[in-house]
Amino acid sequence: MSNFNIKFIMQILPFIATLGANDKSNISGLGVYISRSIVGPYDDNTLWDLKNVPAVGVGFSSRLWLNNLPIHVGVGLSPKIWEMKRKQGDTKKITINKVNYVDLWMRLSFSAMKCIIFSDLNVGTYINGKRYIEESDASFQELKTITEEDISIDEFGMDFGISFGLGYQIDKLQVNLKYIRGLLEPSEDIKFYGTVLSLGYEF
Image 1: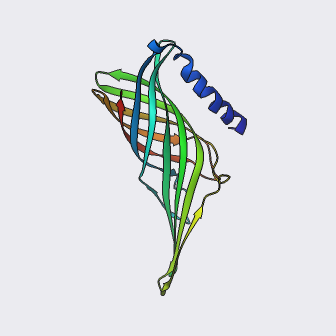
Image 2 (image 1 turned 180 degrees about the vertical axis):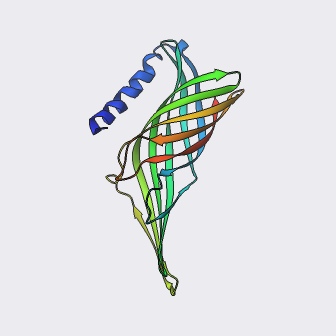
Image 3 (image 1 turned 90 degrees about the horizontal axis):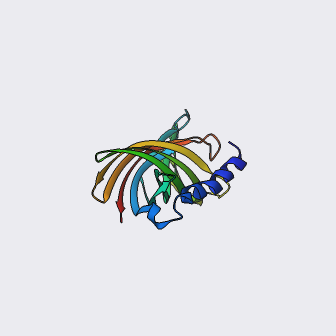
């Protein structure tokens, strides 16, 4: 998908989400949520032992009606953390990447009693990140070094993905579990995937 298409999606998604909200009667709920995610790149690198690490995110959401179709839209902070280990002889290198994305998402859902089945479309913008590099040698423990560096804004681009999940409504509380699948490479040879568990409250 080209950069033009991504920019178009970012511009049109908020517009679509607010088409049905030009009247207060169409807005049925505002909410907040907190999430615990294990999201990172696919593990297809044979040189590194890769592990996705849990991260905590927060966000806001709103339930709208779009031409009599109920949808959710929201915006949230979606951090992604993964650890890469590589060992060659006595030398070991550990790299931890922490990248922060702001996600804009739109959800279609279907309810049966208190259970919910849903699908999300999300577009994410990279805002900042950190990389921690630890290098050590089993023969010379005193030579262990730890380096911290900022991840350039140019290193990660737009993220675009889809997710599917299940939810359960308890009065004004909602618990959701979803699986995310990235459709773009925000960085070379990287596509994000993983699971997100969230707890939301609707005012």
